[in-house]
Length: 499
Image (cartoon, rainbow, N blue to C red; front, side, top):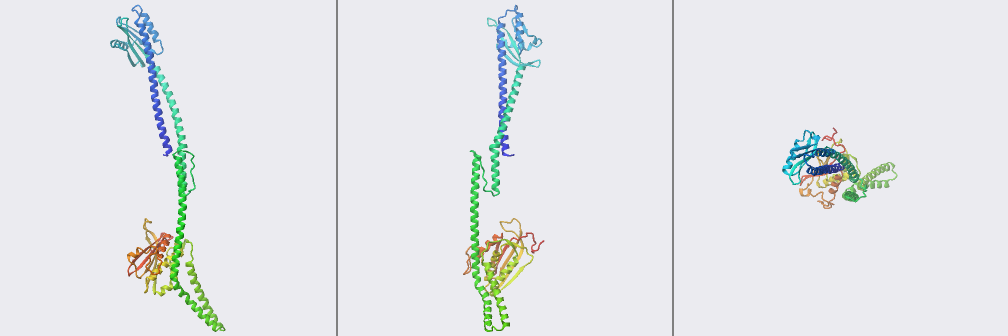
């Protein structure tokens, strides 16, 4: 049930109870007033009749007594009158009480004995009535008799009933009017403002921080609307600040990755110098031979072909280097991890041969694609493979593998799901447990000329691709770096084939 409906219902219930109580007590009050008015009339009539009866001489004026009683009972509300003279044992009554005056005779005798008036509500022949009985005395103060007047109360009850319906009608009109007023006031002052607040919250939840609530009032809901507007302003400012900070952070991360990339290029520069120097020497030698025998067209053609081939080789090496060094914004595209690993191995072919490292490749061509930035992921694998090569100064075995595994990322996944697992395993010097715990810390390095940023940058790149890196290593037994990346298609068997 809505708040406005509840409020209207509760207020209406309170109003109905209050007005109903007021009407009930008003009806009782009116009834009491009518009863007291009727009693006053009966008492007044009885007192007047008493004075006349006390001065009558019996038995000479018996007819006068009867005519007096008939005159009193002729009043519209008086049902009957009974008079009793105890000395003469005479009983006078109106014709309406021909057969039923005995109970009232008893009341008169009791009133004479107790020397006080008697009042009683009862019914006579199914007619509701009020009887008033009082004694009267002679001139010497001696009780000589009593009189009882019977007043018909049905007319009074009709007036009470009429008054009751009048009060009920008035209360009903008041209740309807008040409930309608409460309903309108609740709708205007409660339901509509709350609806505006709910609408504002809905806009806010959808990201519309420019929405404002306009309430030109001076109450708690207006202050709540002002607080809501201020909250929207603060949230908008906070969102803009977060966006700026996020952009700054991304720019710093890009700069950090670029710095690490340049550092890696510095480490490769000496190796690439040899790679470029060899074709340059070939070119230089063939150029000297051409210079010595420019007339030998057949040899000239052969030497020029060799020079062109070596020039293309140098160009390819330089393009690979520039493509790796050039700073680009990260992009997301479907990638074949196996092809990316192969390209990275080609790039490191010279240091692999120089260190006499045997490379073992273990992956399937049917592995699913991953979504990511090829340059950034190549930087990760280049860093890991280069570290593995450098950890085997006397040669060894480098094993690269890629497979699909059912696992879960702690703190993120509730159930196991498929992840692409890329393992870089070496038979190098390995690491101690204390070093493993610090290798991803910025500027921590075990190399004499290292920057200490390579693994930290690699970890950041993998995390940006919704993955993570695990390390297993023992001193003297080599290391295994495992990179986990989510595939584009999630439902695969562990062997890497589609179901």
